[in-house]
Length: 241
Ligand SMILES: Nc1ncnc2c1ncn2[C@@H]1O[C@H](COP(=O)(O)OP(=O)(O)O)[C@@H](O)[C@H]1O
Ligand SMILES: [Mg+2]
Image (cartoon, rainbow, N blue to C red; front, side, top):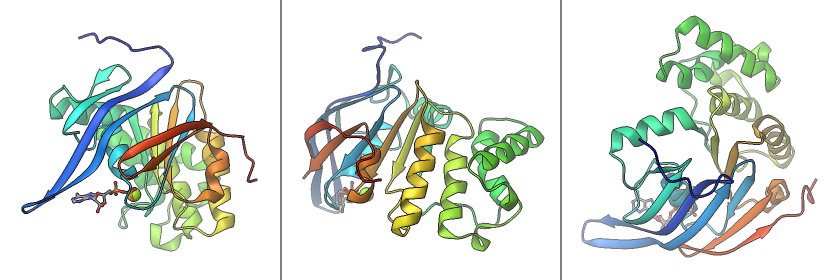
């Protein structure tokens, strides 16, 4: 199957996206017609107050959640129009996730946690562990490969989470509040590391945050309020360093 590619520079394109959540007979309109796109090779921040819809938008643009209406193209794939199993397959191949709470599996070692996305894709165990170890080395904690998450500091756990997000070399990396569980110094360390290891001419990194300390790591910043993107601006690089 082939798809219209909107533009070679565009990785993700979101048009007229709306989303509500219903709890019983109460329905909350969370996204009110979002238009927005992310280029290849850029670090795009989505910023705005708590509850404005950032996590919902991030989930929709990477295929974790379906919009009620509107269109979402990611790497040319119409995520709004293809069956769920294909969306899931798209996501496991093309998207790396970094969450606020790290979401590491407590019973697995650091290396095993990092190997998970490869195992999901059918990479044999021995090779997956080898690639996971290399990835842990590139985020500077190879000596922690055999440790379980509860033996690691918050910053170290976040490094493991970054390694896990990048190990299958996804063209799209999404980060939801990657620094909000960390103190300021660890937050900067993590963003520097993320800028170094996740930056790639063909990779898009999308960071949701309401932590102004890290906005300087963006190439562009989309400001969100009450379910809408208000404006998208270029960022001055590393102004906060
Ligand atoms: N699964 C859900 N069910 C019901 N309401 C939800 C759900 N997820 C989010 N919401 C509501 O949608 C709004 C936006 O949430 P969210 O996208 O998480 O905002 P943000 O990430 O900007 O804090 C909030 O009012 C939240 O309570
Ligand atoms: Mg959120």
